[in-house]
Figure (cartoon, rainbow, N blue to C red):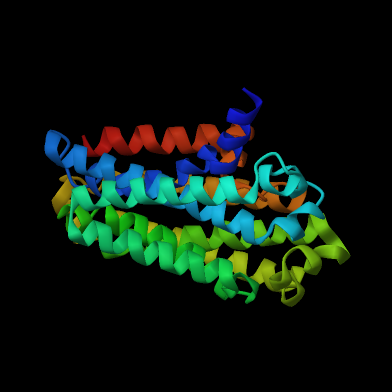
Length: 290
């Protein structure tokens, strides 16, 4: 049981919530009764879940020495010695091959998108994660690829405004994570993540402000665009904008006043205000476009 728990922690299934971005296309395309399309989107999402987990495994193998000196990452299965490097490497390859096979079942485009995501993240693990700003851009591009997998990968035309909004919100969350790490690790930050040496609190505050504004602006323009009104048959999606604005502001409060923001996936479920806001936005959006 303990070994199984270690493998679950190594694969980090709680991060699979990020792959909900794959469902953006089918939710906003009004093709909810297309069972074959749903199957392809689910397969595409599962593919991203498994491929992203394999990336976590390979990244933990590469970072095991640095993680062993980190106050919290030292508890990771490879850094703590719960899972050997050899076993982790085999497990990561198996999970990766299954993930690639699932995307191949969807389409060649979906497979190509996942391969690009994999190569980009391997480059990130190999050294690009040490380059300030570029490290967060790669994370943001990863989310854009998720949206493209659930749109172009399953033959749904992607909305440019939704793509831009997805990119901006992930940049916002990425810079929020860097801000939380810089605050938590203080003077010792660079020894745990080299890119943090090039970040400052003032710089991250500026980047958070820019990306927060970009997220609000691009989402607002999406709700008001003629294409959106035609597809959904309503211009009332603009009334969901306040939930997005409040969610952004609440997350900034968590980063600056609550010492959170280091892991957006868990922060969502840990903060009652943020969770209620996201659920309310989702419920209102689905009601308006039904």
